[in-house]
Length: 184
Image (tube, rainbow, N blue to C red; front, side):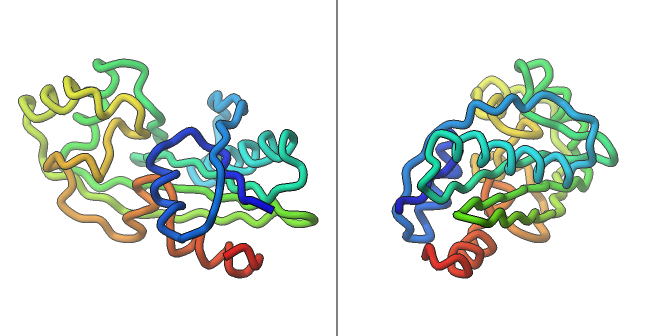
């Protein structure tokens, strides 16, 4: 049985590949519309529903779903709809510490395992020129919170927790789960 990653994210594919497991990636059709939940409940729900939706199409395969959000206080920052919203998010994160939550759900025959990680990320104070240059690059537009910690821009001063969780899939914790289920 081949593992199915319920994701279209190139970052999640790269991170899961680091575990050495053989898998295919299939985008989930789950609608991620806002639900008014806490950040940890949101990522767990979205990871679970992405995995369930793909599992309905691949019923004989184990399926791994994941979701990531950035949270400042009680405000959840998803993917920006455009450059203006990306710039607004980056201004909000500038010089502050925020949390990045990533939820993971693995569905196998007879079991659904899920967990989330929380990583504290502190941004440097960001100048207007840097924000505009970063937004113009297009990189923030497909990422929760309008940034990628791996993008190579001098945004992040400190990261406390799972770096790979901030990228989109906490590799160590996911590998441990795959080992527990004898998939790795």
